[in-house]
Length: 465
Image 1 (cartoon, rainbow, N blue to C red):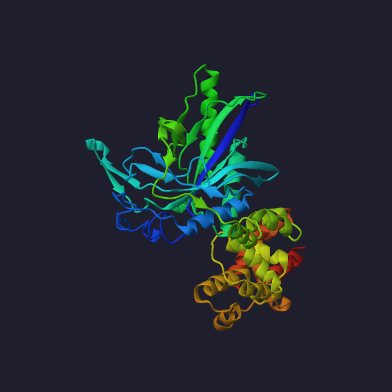
Image 2: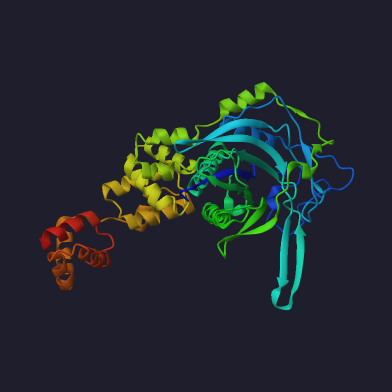
C-alpha cells in the first residue's frame, strides 16, 4: 500500500439507553422475545397514528453530542427517509436530514483528532429472518418487527481515518465514551453498536477522494478490522488491474472472511427526504443543555491521562477503557488497596471474567493476598463466591478455613521432598534449564495447595543452589 492512501469515514449506529421505543410506548426489553410481540399501531405504521419523540433518547443524543464537543443548534426537526423494504412497515424511516441535533464535533483517538460531522436520532427498522433448505432450493423469509422503532443515534465522522487499526481504535474509543456518560451500553454482541465504514483509496499525495464503498452493520471490532483490510486490498487490486471501483453497499461474510456486494449505493435524493409532518420541529432549551453539560462525568481520555500517573500504560489501556473497571480500581485504592496490586488483579482476574465485586470488598481481598493469608488460587475462589453471594472476603475465608502456609521450616521439608521426588527436573535446573523450576513448583502446589508460592519458590532455589 506504499503508493496508496486509505481514506475512511465512519457511520456508527448506537442504541441509546431507554426503556421504550423512539416514537411509541413499546418496551425495548422485548427484542429477544417471540417475533412481533412488542409492537403497536405506531411502530407498525398503521394509518392515522401520531409518533411522539422519546425524551430519554433525545437526552442521550444531546449528552453524546456534548461529550464529542459538538455544536447544538437551537432548532432541530425529524424527516421522512423514504424507501421500500420488507422490514420497514411504514415505507419510510423517521430520521434527520438537514437539521440534525448536533454538528461539528471531534473525538481524540490516540494522537489524532477525528472530526465528527453530526450526531442525530432516528428509528431502527425491523429484522428479516431468512430460512430455507438449500438442498431442495426452498426458501422463506419472515419479518420480526419487535426492533422496528427502537431509537438509534447515528454518529457520522468526517473521512479522517487512515487505516484499519485507526478505524478499530476509533470505534473502541467511541464505545468507551458512550458507556462512560451512560448514553448507551454499546454492547456490539447485542446489536447496540453497529459500525459502517465508508472506504476508499487514492494515490499518495492526491487530494481527490476515490470512489467509496460502504460496509454495513459490522458488530465486532475484530470483524471491523478484518473487513477494512479485505476491502482495501480488493480496491487496490481492482485499480491496479485497470478495473473501476463501483460505489456500492457491501456486507461482510465472517465465515468466508470477505466482503460481498449487496446493492448500489443510494444518494440523498434517492430517499426523497421531506420534513416529518406529524412531529413539529423541536426547540432545544439552552438551560437544559447546559445542565446536561455540567452533569457529564469525567471522560475516558481525561481519566486515562490521570491514571497514567499511577499505573503502567498497558494496565491503563485495559482499566481506562471500561468505566466499571476504572470505578472498581479507584474505589479499591481509595479504601487503601495498593495501586499496582489492585490493577494487576483487575487486569488479570476481573476483566477476563466480567465478575465485579464492590471496591471495598476488592480492597479487603487484596489485603488478604498481600498479607499472605490466602493463595492466589484461593483468592480467585473467594472473589467468585463474594460476587455470587455478596458476602465479604473475610467471611468466606473464615468459613472455608483458607490459610496459606508460610512457615519456612514447614515448607523446607516439603521442598526437600519435591526435589527428591523429581531428580531429573532438579538436575535439569542445576544444568541451566531454568524452566525446570515450573515442574518442581507444580509438584509442590499439588502436594500442598496452601503453600505460599513465593516462600516455597525461594526455598527451592536455595536448596537447588
